Length: 234
Picture 1: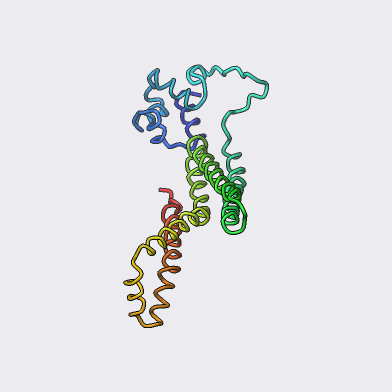
Picture 2: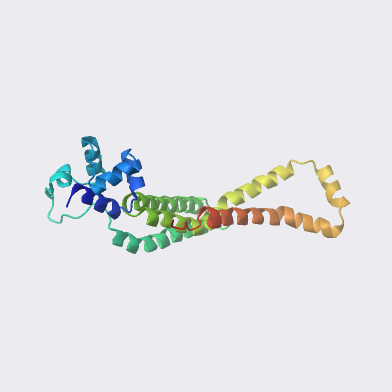
């Protein structure tokens, strides 16, 4: 196997394009293409960078000398694409389940518990769920399969945004109520009393219930339908 064939094989196993590998190594895409076709030879520093990035030895790249294994198993340090595909759905369900449990504990601690311990545990659960999902997604994207990693992150946030956004929206709603309370009562009463009774009731419903619900739906739908939409392959 030539050096160019090895670079091509390593790059495809990581799910990288020639341009992505070129950006990682600080060269042009044309340079990577010439290496893979055998039309050019990488400089010494680039060969070392290739060996470090793909976790192989320079001897293997240049002379087909296999590195000695430190243990009998000789397992690869990186997760294979098949293992990543098998584990991604399970981890997605676990992180979303953890986030949902965190939300339940958060509201339980706020409205039913006699202490703030459930709320604290709920916040920590949500933070751990987000950190785990993002870490796994970034690992997939950078080390295994770039497209699968991006899809994992998008799939997580399509669902989790509906759970995570409830807390900041609730905090924003109470902040809004506090700002309304700062308005002098006399002009506010005059405003409400000047309106017909049906409009007065409708206005209160829209202001104190409809507005926060609409804002919550707008944020969640924007993240779900715009930021996390499936990218079409070119």
